[in-house]
Amino acid sequence: MLAPRYTGVRTFARLPHVEVPHADVDAAVIGVPFDTATSFRSGARFGPEAIRAGSTLLRPYHPVLDVDVFGTLAVVDGGDLAVTPGNALRTTEQIAAALEPVLRAGIVPLVLGGDHSIVLGELRAQAAVHGPVALVLLDAHADTWDQYYGERYFHGTPFRRAVEEGLLDPARSLLAGMRGPLYEAADLEVPRELGFEVIPGPDLIRLSPEEYGARVRQRLGDGGPVYLSFDIDVLDPASAPGTGTPEVAGLHPREALGFLRALAGIAFTGFDVVEVAPAYDSPGQITALNAAAVAFDLLALLAVSRR
Image (cartoon, rainbow, N blue to C red):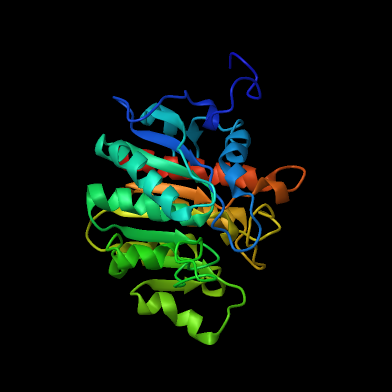
């Protein structure tokens, strides 16, 4: 209340900018401005900047989950990681190397992307510290293809690579929100063949938040590390036009936030919000605003689990 929220340096939710790892920090918002593993519209390299700008109106208290997020957690904005434009494999290595010491310090990262290829580096760091993790994914695409145009490290391939590298436990993982046209009917079975449970988009919208939360908890079983990845294109393009691979007939923001809030109590070891491409956003920057709201709800989930 000392200064208008649109003033000052653009950190996430006006949090202090602190290099991590750092003592006495519970969670860190970290940007990964990389997008040269996209298959359609590039521009997500500017996603972290846009989400930070969209977060300026966020306040500490989350009424629905009844938690003071920044009063419960010590949260900082850790800035952006180093990336190598045009080289997804090298960037994956940089992400893993930078995030591993953050995780070893007990800090939960909330990563702002960037295209979805960056999650492979995140999962390498997660597995190095926690062992294979379960994945809770909300996304219009399963991102389990083997290759795109001969490239194996692409934003449509990270979860296949993660399974191959032993970073994920598919038997405890649930992917939801997949929709849109595919290359062939066999594409529908690829994530299931890898061992994932899949809730397609048309089925997801018929679930209540409580039903979705129960499905996730049943799949996760009794404990073990869990990672949550949120691709902004799970939202309908009416609410998130600023993304690289939009698909019609997606979730409304209130539906997506309801599904996230139904996961309160799960102790996640990390999060990301990816594929925000602000060049395609509306004049009101609704994609960035929705992404910032999602990111805040992810921190609220962490706060509830630590309360």
